Image: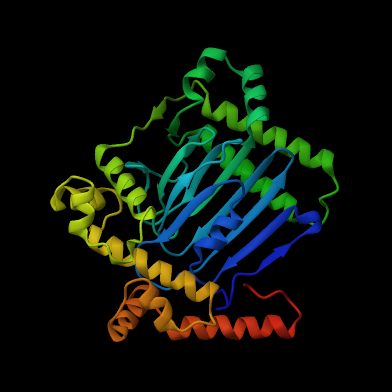
Length: 343
């Protein structure tokens, strides 16, 4: 069980291997921990959140591995400098890549600068492998036909579970295990290079192999509508936005908007807007604990403090005052230990 304090990073020799504990939901820490990507993480269902992230740096590649106790929506863009291979290692409830269902053992493939929309199921175990763009393309040209690579290189795709994907998952886990051991320190560049090469070749053979079909997924109209809604919300002060106003600005009916949000997130747009504001308040409490709960709540459109506290506790499993107390106790300990305090 993770202790209830601020997420703390523990670095190994030369910062090759990094572990991040998440005793509470912290979207900013998730963004910092997943290398080379700009993803927004959002907790969509109520409950006390905890998780753990591992990050391994290899020559021109990196592996990010994580597990959560709750489902998390991930939206954003992959790095324009790298190819991304995602693996779902295990999940209790259905996960989705855009609208498509993803099962344990399936692979996700995304080209540089791709939009990403992933809904992790309950208790997901996942792994992202990213490769330097130039390195990946050079290796592809040597191992596969140019026409095959050109056909799929700029796509988002799902590769259904098969023996090749299982072997790739096992290899990624093995590399993580080996690189955590003291006998393989960060200075052993040749050993790390061999592991990176093995991982790259295995990924290419799995993605472009001939033993299965590559499934290309297209964004649905409802998913596009939700994407437009989120772009609109990011561009304005969305703390006071009502569903009717959102529908009007997107030139659709409220019912159409409800169908779209239920398809993509499994919740109504009204529920989504409230959860979004609750997440923002929580992030502010984590980042600015010296300001009052009332200040942060009213800044995000919550005017009735009793109702806000009840909604917050129902969703996150603790009262806002408990969140604030944990942060202040944690920062006091850090101050006593001479560690840096968050700004």
